[in-house]
Length: 380
Image (cartoon, rainbow, N blue to C red; front, side, top):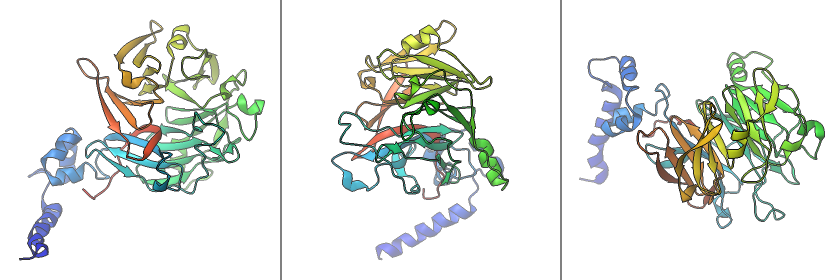
């Protein structure tokens, strides 16, 4: 009997199982889905094929996974003609999967004038969406006149409304489903741009687009910064308790900190203890707890706002030189100094925080990372 002939009965059985087997015998599938949604996806994946399909179905609550902006390393330019590609890491299968390609982008990640550093590409995660906000195009111009959004639910790229002033080297962040950009420089330094802040309600924009209502939501100008000192670096505006927290310089260098109140549209000084311990990339867990990596010492710390101090969560040499931090559902993910490793720290562990590593695909280095809902698919 040929190999093809031998496989036919198995294929027929799988097809029959897919179309006729209930998820839970005796229960309608919609009720079974409600029951199974309470079980960890990793457990469902290990039980049977129908449950494995279920955890990737559009109708099933998605688990969270890593997304990364990846660039070919200098020795692997043959992997792609694009300076940046977008990938999703599936924590169940431990595989990296490419996202659908975005519209053509004129991004410049490396330049001979900057031997020791790469040009920043700034993006944020907002309400299940990946939003590309700022980057550089040749010759040192803003690359994005409007944000580019990847919707994880539809798995499509959409374009947002034009910025009043496209920029780079700015502060980018989100709070309560709203996107913010502040300061930065446009084609050249302008004081008005360096002192400006704008917001875009992405959720309202998507809702109006679904209902086919016009006009779609656009950018709204807010209260200006007191000066243009926050246009020196590409920095994260960390959403925390209805505020945006940011510092104007990365690492251990002397810096200034500032806090924007998104409800009152006002600026205020950063508390002394918060500023003193902000010595590396930072992120907030569900906008409630800020974590920062002291990149010179390799310490992951969390902020105690009552005592205005930082508490060490874990110290590990792998965290030295950290480039970026993201946090969600009890995990803190740190893009390591080499750009090819991502440290995942379980800060919700009952005992000491656990740490493990995720490696990016061979030949690539990560430009940025985010935590978003997994992609749905049927090829399981």
